Image 1 (cartoon, rainbow, N blue to C red):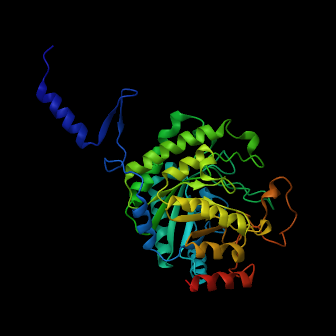
Image 2: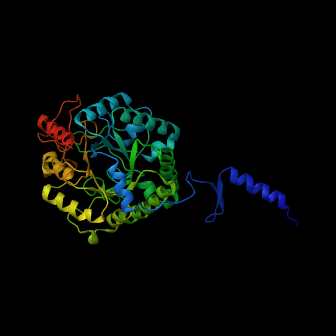
Image 3: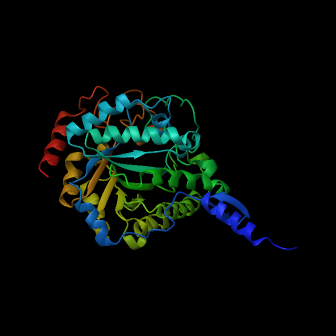
Length: 387
């Protein structure tokens, strides 16, 4: 059969202009990701340290409005609450906070990606108004592994984070054929904000592999570590393809008393692939400082993206001066007490409390904006102002 070369050339040109590419693995045509066409590499140590020099000492909290119990309730159109967010970020600014760590969710993107981006824009406008830079968290392996869209159920009373949901969740994490949905979400969100100066860093995956043994462990994905590490490696590649101007980080979360060379596979991957090293440490001062010194061997800036659990000795008075001493960005868990119920301890999963604890586990302010501890807020303000 004679081939019409002009027709073939025309078809190829149309395909290229339409932004499509051929997928060799299943012989189908699929839409190209919104990337630059080049895959970025891990930042050099010099570039990472130059990034840190652009900012004052970064201090803030893990933020969700008190009117939302999880990421879906925060970001879905019906429950998005910009008025409350505006009020609470004003309180944050008054304390001296200049950054917040904020969790997103892939399902909120999937059901309404245009509206989701618009709400993110609204959130960033509010944050910028109050001089607060944002770290967005794309995925999360902690708490309920079965997220569902729509009106969220009421949290179990007096139980810590009883309504929080994982992203992408069990059904997607355990099924590689569904991971394309995660790729679309990661690259779609990052591509839109890749040059946005209001976003200072991307946290790709919160506590990957967390087994949730004290809460949802009995319904978790078998061999979760294996699935999470595989997804994490893919997510890191997809994020690099976006070639964002902001750095990438992945939380080291199980290495409080572990030398770098003895960390598990997930923490090792996080340590070796983050532009800026981030870690979680709910421990007293001596252990916290030991972890800081160990991770400082990287030569890269450090961010503690989770700390402050009063009953276990991780307090502002004991821990925040350590972070200031070593110029480590600090994000405590919780800001305004509300539907996330993180004033209650982790142990409430096994034995729910019957009333508010005398000693709050997390959070800083009551729902009306007054401090849980006036002297605590006074201390935070003073330490930040002395920077």
